[in-house]
Length: 427
Ligand code: UD1
Image (tube, rainbow, N blue to C red; front, side):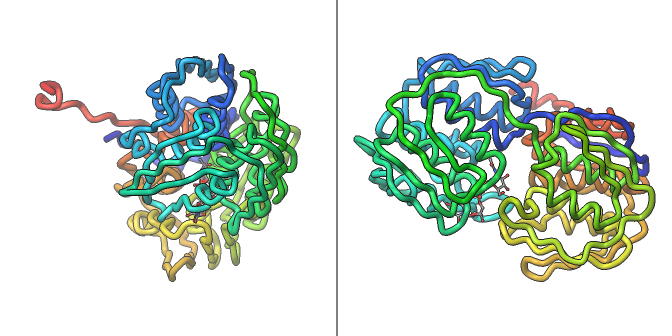
């Protein structure tokens, strides 16, 4: 498995363009199945998760090409509504295929995506929503079959504002007969992006970004051209890395409006931030201050996807900080790794108590999941000495070459790819 080797202690400096949002592009790629023909999607980042989704779409019969940051996808040859188990295992986001395939074929078979490194990740809300629209669902041994001769608009209430469930229901309802209202909907910017994409295809959806989304079903959707929003989590990761290394970095192609909670926390930590249109400048001259309390919860609150990264910054801050994680139960795996680097953090259930230290020190650590891995890269950039982040493939799921991104900002970071042994070559 690839490793990242980082010589830390260098303040980041320079300008970086932020790529398109993985979490917007994934449901949009799935939603393209709703309209037969050729779509052209721009600002789609070259990430492992995106390539996995394109492979899945190809296995379902579509023709896909990803050149530069444009995906061309021809959904006309789509030939099956059965998502094989091995594909479901490859990526949890294949769950997004459920709504569109059910709508196109009147039936869909998928497999439980199962738990993952950050928590249980149930799909009950997805299934309940589809049932509300008229789907009959059978589950046995992890195989889930949904059938609906016709999807009918309905009132769907989500007890928790699940991002994925909101998106799946929007996709299934876009061509249902009549009106669907989703109350208790998630409000993430990626949901607004999905609404905009669906409307560009001819859907009639309003309300994304609020907790009530109304979908007036239409008879047909048409292929279109669309540009995906910038990735707020990648932007946030770079901002935190700039602050943790006491650097000065300018981000372009961002949307600061999507980063309000992070900007608020960073300013409380004493980081200077200026925003001008789609440009954000971060500079941090001295030691950051502790932030008494951060609670992760659904948008617009502090994002769980930036929790591990901000913990690195606070582990170097002057004072004592507390972070409470309310979205996923298994999201403190980076803490043990950070302890190897000298961080002073203790955990009590879903709370992390962080006593800031003067320095982190390079060590060999393991990326256990995507965002934990990004956090360890930040820790390595800020630490004294050499850090090796193992299992870097987790990070590739959400960052288009994290080493190239930070090299552009003056970081000394490189990737070590294992040399295949004679046995590997023989296979
Ligand atoms: C999306 C993001 C992920 C982010 C998360 C929360 C994508 C591709 N991924 O994931 O990066 O960390 O939002 O911001 O967009 N839940 C249930 N039942 C369900 C669905 C969810 O109990 O049917 C629970 C989950 O177990 C979790 C919480 O709700 O505890 C949040 O999950 P959800 O908002 O659905 O996240 P995802 O869409 O999986």
